[in-house]
Amino acid sequence: MFPATEVLLQLASDAFPRDMTLALAYLLALPQVLDANRCFEKQSHSALSLQLAAYYYSLQIYNHLVPCLKANTHTLYRADPKELIRLVTQHVTAHSDWPADVEELIGQLQVYNERLTDLTQARVLQGLGRGVDIKRFSSDTHYKKHTILGLTETLDDSVWRISLSLAQRYSIPLWDIYMTHLEYLFTDSGLSTKDIEARVDTLALFDSLKSQPESFHSHMSKYVLTTVEGTDLPRLLYYYALLEECGCGSYCSSIITPDTHIKLLKKLRSVTTGLDYRKMTDEVSDPLVALEPVLTSQNVLSISKLANRLPRPGGGVVSASAVHATWLGKLFWRGDPQVFIYLPG
Picture 1: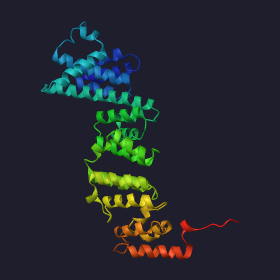
Picture 2: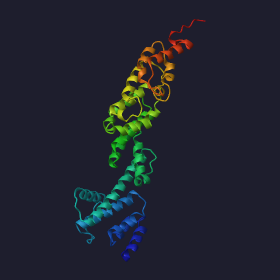
Picture 3: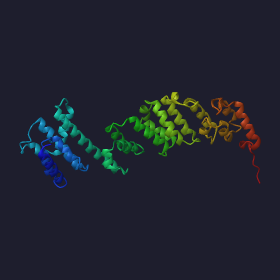
Picture 4: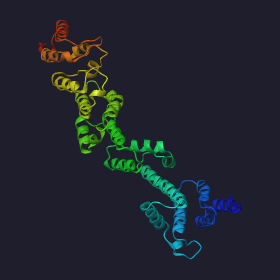
């Protein structure tokens, strides 16, 4: 290390809070350009300090390409710093095959440009009232991704567009963005099933999601199905329709395939009220226990025709005769509510 380096770095650090121009002058006098990082890294990540770092490396790159720093009246010093940063960044990005020493400087310029962009984006997020930690967003990759995915949990189209823009900016897969949003629609949005379908279609979520059927099935079964009420047959029907459309059948570990679920739900939705479909098809409980409360004289025949699609816990399937027997037991002990006659008085 050169003897003057430590002195210049200390002088620059001392000047930093009160006189950025003086700090820059000390840094430009360093024998080794990259030693300036030791000063920059000590500063808090404010917009001003990051801009100064980007400006410093823009000056150094320009000087390597067009030597001029020895002429202290050169117009380079009078150029708008933001404009100089933009022009140098644009120039080095548009070309390649730079000398090794210039490549190092370009790398540092990119680092500070990235940090400045991160800081700007974090402030935009903070303005949304989402409780974003600006410093952490600009330095913690995991937190950054978690924050952006959290933004997708919204029905506000402007926030949704920001999340898409940030995902593209930070190379977060679109599949992750869409999957998180779909999970939110099912679990926390408060939307009806019909409205969820409409939003999925409007945003064209499924075009991307169906590209990874195994991951889609895994995520839906783990995080979405568990939140759907067993008696919400329309929601369950849409859930299994998505799995079927995505081609998830081969990834299902259960005996009942998405296609069979769809057929069962379409029929049962029209002939029963209050059926706990998830309990009936969990392959752990006896399906007849879930069916018994909803059996009536008007639906027992229709349900018995579906019985052989329902697996029993110990193996085999429910028989039509078992459904009729369950209905007869209910009829004997409790009668048929649909034919009760209530006498006045």
